[in-house]
Structures are given as C-alpha cells and as structure tokens.
Image 1 (tube, one colour):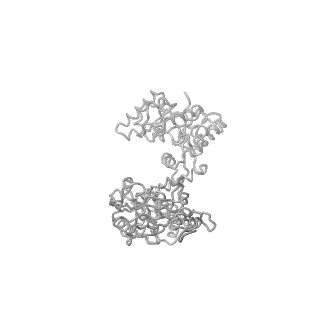
Image 2 (cartoon, one colour; image 1 turned 90 degrees about the horizontal axis):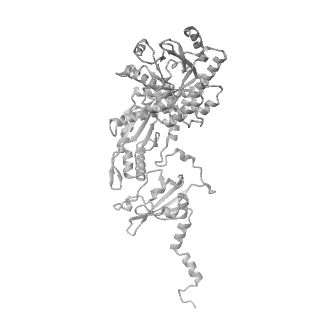
Image 3 (cartoon, one colour; image 1 turned 90 degrees about the vertical axis):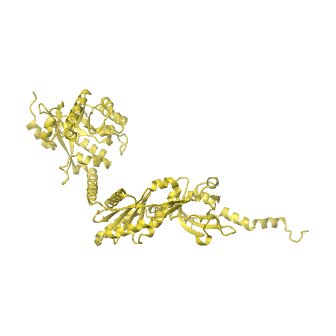
Amino acid sequence: MNHHGNRPPGKQAQSLAQHPARLVKDAFEQSQTGMVITDAEGRITMVNDAFCRIAGSDRAETTGWPIEHFFVSLRPFSRLPGAGDSAQTTALSWQQEVLCRQNNGESVPVLMLVDTLLDERSKPRGRLYSFVRFTTPGGELLDDQHWIHIDPMTGLPNWLLLRDRLDHALAQAEREDTTLALLFIDVDRFKSINDAVGHIEGDRILGEIARRLQQEVRSKDTLARLGSDQFVVLLEKDGTAEAAQVVAERLQEALEPPFTSEDRYLLLTASIGVALYPGDAEDVETLIQAARSAMFMARKKGPGRLAFVDHRLTSRLKEKYRLESQLSEAIHLPDRHFALHYQPEFDRNSLRCTGLEGMLHWKHPERWQQPPNHYLDVIARLGLGVRLNRWLIQAVIADHRQWSDDASPLAQLPISLHLCEAHLAQDTFDSRPLDHFLRHLDTTSFEWLTLKVPAQGLGNDLDMAAHMLKRLEQLGIRLAVEELGSTPVDLAWLSRLPFHKATVDARLARAHRDGRRLVEASCRMLNSLGIEPVIVSVDDETVATDMEATSARLVQGNLYCPAMSAKALAAWLTEHQPPEE
C-alpha cells in the first residue's frame, strides 16, 4: 500500500523526466539552434550539437576556446562587461549578423542572439549565445550571394560594392556636371599594433575603427573597407575639396579617443589622401590610384596627416594608365596595331650590312616615333610580353619565307629579335614554353634567327634561363645577350651559356665618368669569352666618335641606318650594300 506522497515507479520516472532542470537540459541539447554558454572571460563551457554542426567542430574542439574564435562580426563586437561595470549600464541582450568560421575555411552567415547570464548579485557571470542559420520556410539555406559585397569583419561595403557605387557615382556626376571626392584612409602603424595584441583582438579594433568612421560619414556617402587597415570614403553630391577636408578632419577626430585592449590604451591615427573628380581623375582606376598616391604623400609628412593630389603626379598617373590601356588593346589585335620594322647591323670597317634586327613599330598616331624600349617595360608589367613576342616571331618568319621565295638577298642575312624575360620561363600563360611554341611554326630551319635575351633575365633565375637557352640552341637558334653593362651578370655563368653575340649600349660612354673604359672593357671581356660584341644606339656623330677607339667590329644605330619596313629595306639594300671584296 502506497503511503501519502509515494508514487508508483512509472509515475516517478515520468516526474523526473518533466523536472524543469531536465527539460532545460533536453531543450539545450536537442535544439536545432546552435547554443553556446561561456564563462565571464568569454571562454566556452558548454555547446550543443547544433552549434558543432554550424561550426564544423566537435565538442572537444570547442570547449575552452574564446567564443570570438568561431565567428567574425559584421559590427564591432561588444565585450563582456568588466568587473567594475554594472548590469544596469550595459546591454544585457542583443542580436547581430555574423559569419561562423568552419574548419574547412568557409564562413556561414547566421543570426547571433546574445543573452547575459547574471549571478545572485546581478553581476554578469557569462553569456548564452544562440546561432540561427538563415533558411527558407521549407528549411533550405538562403542564397548568400549578397554576402560577397560585404566585408565580413566590419559589415562595410567591400571593393566589389565600392567599385559598383563608384561606377554609378561617376556616371551620374558626368551627367549632372557635379564633383566627387574620394578619401583613401590608411591606419598608421596598425600592423605593429596587430602583431602586439593578436589577430583576434586586432580584428575587434578594426571593427571599432569602422564604427567610429561610419558615424562621421553622411548616409548618402559610402564608407568601404578595401582590406587590412585601409578604408575609402566616397563623397557624392558635395564632393568639393573643402567638403573633403571637413570630412577628413572629422574622421581624424573620431580616432582621437584611445582604443582599449585589455589593460592597454592604444592611440591610433590615420593618413588620408584625397582625390577629386574630374579635376584629378575621370575614371575609377585612376581616381583610386590618385587618392592612394595622395595618402602616401600624407604619410611622408608624419602620422595623422592629410594630403591632396599632386597634379604633376596625377598627370603622370593618367598617362601611365592611358598607355597601359592602349597597349593592352593593341596587343590583343597585333596585326591591326603593330608592324615589324628592321634595322641593319654593320661591319664598321667595310660598312657592309651583316644582319638585321626586327623591331616593333606601333602604328599609333601619337606614339609611332617612340622607340620600342619606351613601352616594352610596360608590356612586361602587364604580363603581355609573351603574346607580343609570339606575334613578332611569326611575323619575322613570314617575312623571311617571302624573301626566300623571292630569292631576295635579305633572305641571306641573319635576323635577331628581342626576347622578353617572361619567355625564359617554363610556366607561360597557356602552358606552352617557347621551344614548344617554336616547334609548331611553319619553317624548316631556324639557322638564320637570333633571339636576344635581356641581361636582366639572366640575373633572376639562371638555372631556369640556362635550361631554356640550351633547348633553344638544340632547335638551331642562335642566342645573344642584350643590354650588357646595364645589369649585373655573373661572368662565370655567362661563359657557360650558349651565346654568340652581345649588345653594348654606346650611351654608357656618356652615362658614367669612365663610360668609354666601361664600353671597351665590356667588349674585351666578351671577345675573350668568344662572344661577338655589337655596339648599339650609335645615333649621331658624337656617339660614333666616342666609339672609335673600341675593339668592337659590329655597330648599329640611326647614324648608319634607321629601322624601316620590309618593303623599304629591300630597296635600301639594293642601293646601299657595297659589293663584296
């Protein structure tokens, strides 16, 4: 017989299952919402399975870690109140969008809800974090493509979104004949601060910087983060120099209060460069580059300074990007924009033409008179040297084949071509090394072809260069070194490489105090290695007089004959080539 208060075993088990503590535990464990409890220091003490699935970690990999390790906030993260703070003066609960870091390197967008847990004296003793994934009513994950335009650390527009807004802003400013201002902001000495406090704390400080800057920017303007500690502000409508200066001063003032990191106070400043549309630049790329250059000028003045664009520098930047744009377009349609001209090489004693050098001629109305070297460096910087080199090689093969078919004396002359440094590499843009490309060209022999390797290319990776040069030699191609004397070259290596010629620039004689000796020493050194020196850039009588005492036999330059088209060259050779003795 049951006494008063006693219950049957079944009911007793049922009562235990309904106990509030058991219900709370089951709710925590079985919830599909990721849940985490942290201590007063922000370290994880309990997690449920749902959070482990979101974070891609098991419980052993999460317990004891700081909660900040598992997400990046799209707003500055509020730290747990300190011991001296009261619950009444701090937010006890809030929510914000964050990206949860996973072990596979991906980030999952979730809504994070934070509730502060209080002890019996109403003091914070930890927090409960709830992580809710964004799903449709059917449970499918929402498309998160909008996140690609947001910087996950600060919640600000990133470069993609800034570029889009700049494009629209410039188009509107052009239509309405208004001005824009772009402020390029770089936080001074942030790398050293980041190294001192650690990357997690550094991310938090960057979020605080973003929050302060955002408060000083009007709603119609854009604050974006380019990456690291660099931000950009786009001022629309009232984008004058005066307005930009006022905003820049407000941004500087926003950073003046110390930033706190544990028990440290950090003083931060920023260097700000300002570029204006249309005065400083008229397109997105140039405007950003101009603002960045102005920021570097500000930094040179000292921390926390402001600088506007140097218009002389802006002019050079405009010309630089204009040239790069024109060259990029031309190289992708080389038959339309380029021609191959030839400059003869001479025996200085007999004045007989001993060979030809194929030279690039740009059929541009403003740039056709500029020498090829004026833009070859730009082509290399754009990574287009291999493409243009291939077109030159194909063009010279076509000319040589035509001369052979016509039985022209030009077909008996060796032809040299400049080889870009990038062509010495094995890993070209389409995985076709130079020797593989040459093997598939329509020619029976390369005995007449000399490829001129820039001396600079021999200073970077000699082993790689030597490997390619020997493969070219096996094809019957002859090899020369270009611009010897302008770049340091290992003579021991030079003696082992298969070169038969080397060019020495005559202008070295006037570029150095002992320039004539340098030229002659280069010639003697080459002769001793069995390499024929060719003095190039002999463009006037004064230079020719400087070269009279050198031991070089071969010369080339505008004084003897300028570069000309293949058709003009044939007529010139018939008229000027002296008979063989």
